[in-house]
Image (cartoon, rainbow, N blue to C red):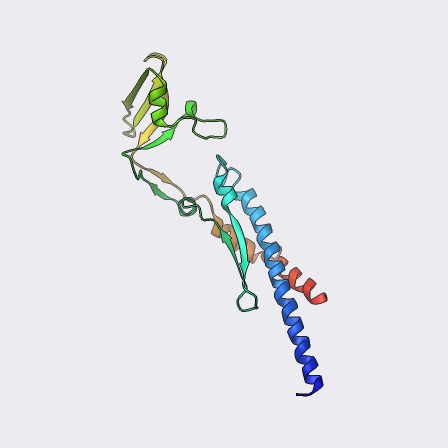
Length: 196
């Protein structure tokens, strides 16, 4: 191989490495931008999910793997098991007990987090009762110092159906197709790398 051909091959290899670096940088910046958008639009209140403990919101992360153009891939997601139910919706049923205990207003913090679980409510007050409701047929757990001062703390239900509301995939599809979304960050990453 001539020295001219060697120089051309080395130049292409160098450009290939720059292209790989630029693709990774652009993908990283694009996933950072997507994360900020997703947290703002879907994980910070309505129309997405109300923030209670923040565990789901904090669990989303991304990573980039691979070292060649054909193997570089970016991943975004969470390992929180209940995220799928929020994405797809569905029926939630109790796993270890007969009822789901849904805390009511007197048993919620301003952020919507349960103050006391059902056993704590039962053990904290001299009076407690389970009152059947008709429509729908559930139970109310009421407790207080006496029957007259008792307040409802929980509604006990056999199951609840939640609608899909996370919209991770819908948000990603829109972001990845948008000229100012992922395409923008990939383009900038590659252009900047090739200028060096």
